[in-house]
Image 1 (cartoon, rainbow, N blue to C red):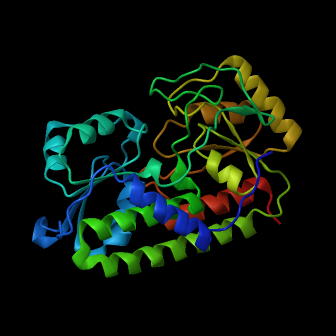
Image 2 (spheres, rainbow, N blue to C red; image 1 turned 90 degrees about the vertical axis):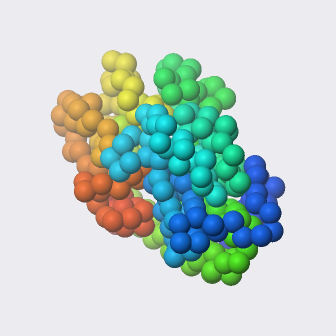
Length: 325
């Protein structure tokens, strides 16, 4: 069983702040870098979770562009020539190394003044497909280059843990302050407000999932390892870290046995990936299906207009599936 950890604390925030200062791969000089559109700081975010942070922290002082379009699966992104040119003109690039290889390459080759890798702003861990809480036998590495739990690969889905996401927010805030010191006070204020929102979200999840009939849930791919660990749950993924891979016949049998043994009621699928496999397994095992959104993008199918709203919808879905009291 996964282990529950602590709330966002002053100690964690201080540690994240210190880590941030040493993790920026490049920073602008002391003069303000806000020379983009209308004098705003020109920020390029690799995908939605980093776009959300940039917009919340930057407010009216930043112009944010996102490389991954709404509805596009982030893992599959290939950078276009236009996006590469856009990246070259930006002041700040926010990305999550190893999630999108084409983004890593483009940012690495660019001359962006400030490059912020979210993976350096919090601790990454290994998560993989589990059966009864143990790593399943499966391929060592998927098509996107992610190695499974038995290898050396690390789970990139840090934004689905509100505490880790808050640590990343702290780091992004510090990067903005350094890149655009003229508006540092605003960035600091906005970062604090966002961390407070995320702390509230963490509290809602902790209280909402404290008393449940089961602690096990099934998902299409292993995106919710950090969330599960944070709140004392066990994620059983049909696939590993790759949302497009197909499970083996043995894996499907193991999941059906586990569902019966652990009182699982629901197989979760997500909005940006086909629900065919999840619905087939659910039908065979006489289980329900529902959406658990990894929030890799906001579309008209999303159960909310932003990260906070969709995470609250995820909480409600988990409470129903796990039998929260």
